[in-house]
Image (cartoon, rainbow, N blue to C red):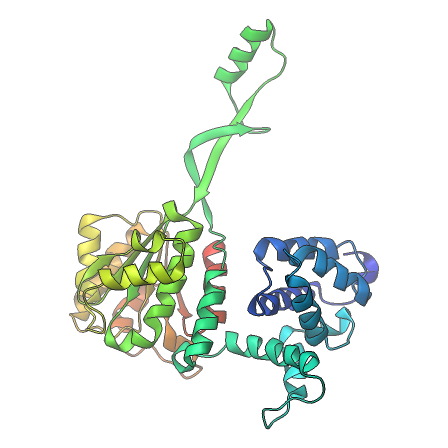
Length: 369
């Protein structure tokens, strides 16, 4: 931004505009990650105190078709509620509280139906992001699942053994000599550097009875990861058996992918023997250099000592271990189950997994692991 725009918190402005993009996606506008980044880049060159400038920057970057325009207009008017962008910089929640306050407590909205439908949509979409998926209605859960399908997995990267052309780095002798022979003289030195590739993510999804309210949403998140990086993502369900699901989750359509995964899982709503399943995994495969994500509430029916031993083995191979526990999203949560106490010494991050916002934060964590 320019100096005159620097009076507000730049990070707060980013939060507000990404929240606006999420609101548009909830309304059916194709405001994906790339379009949001284009909006932020455009705002860096504009005066964000100018409401018209912000409006046109968003309209030109976030809308993909003529059908998006009326939805965009309604959401823009609702989200900013007639206020200038600088007044919305403090946080997304301040805007959503303002919108929620405008809704009629009895469930009916004032004034023109089209003008007031968007404020309700904007505020409810933001509230929905933080609600526990186990307590959602079927319609709300379907909306959360639709938004999960839009998540882009910006995966952390690792150095590859392969080399690629570069402007700087080690001297590429072979290419330098080949060009010199072709041209008859050394016209310039050529360089090379190690290429990078996405870091592999190995995801274990607990499908036991205690995780039943969250298992489908976790598999939707797994589908988004597989679709983003099919060659660098491996997914397994864990319960009483270790079941690979990566192939089933490669289908483009989330519903079809979930149906195929459901057919492949033989132990839905059973118990959890994570120690035995990790031992099976480590005896057959490797997690060397991978980010391992274990989504479970830690209710271990097997021997906690075995789980601790396998977690120790896993920690020696994995680049990072992230444990996703749906109950971590509550302030009074304590890792008191046998499985959690056995695994805790070997976990790098213990994170929540109960809401859409938690999955968005998990995706960001994978990008910066």
